[in-house]
Length: 298
Image (tube, rainbow, N blue to C red; front, side, top):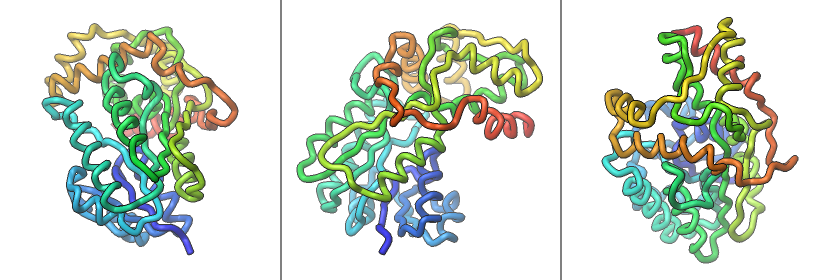
């Protein structure tokens, strides 16, 4: 008999892919989401969709109760007045729900850099949540620490199309591990399939190799037929202002640029690369499979 797995963030880049993999493998899934409209395809595949706010302890407890395991994460809230406060609200609701439900296996999406609580922007709140989960008694917790998402390049497709440049506030030449979210989902799904981890542990997911943003820009430029495409390191204050104008809160914008600026200090290079934490999808393959179709549709 296949296991029952509860998932937070089933509409996200990683969670949606985990859901698809587990459903295809015959698992019983409980998907928690504020609205079930984006989860119709999973509902049609047999998943139970639970419409609830991610901070609703009663709803999360019911979802976790009688489940064999759960995938938990902190979804983005780009309008949050204080992103760390939002992360704590979500994290504390998860902790309380785990305690009340009696669930014994948790796969938690953290990040490379999850060993640091400050100086790493958005990642600091994920590090804090790792500590809280580690304090749970008689619960097996596996923290996934993926590298920088290759999927973040999709956010710049419009910029590249309209302005003919690529850019963030991150250093152009510093190489960091980058990973496709489909590779993260494959690792997570494998652990949720077996639920054979004990105690509290960490698993890095580092992608196929390391890249600089300048190199990634060159790969994108070659794919779209613009080999001269340039990477620009934007000034922090200018980037914050641009993100605020796009609807992000000032605090979230500061946390994003804080994370990007921490990359050059090695926050993403802390985990040592091994055969086990190296995953198959290269940037070249990702750009062809995911970036190029989006770019061409704009």
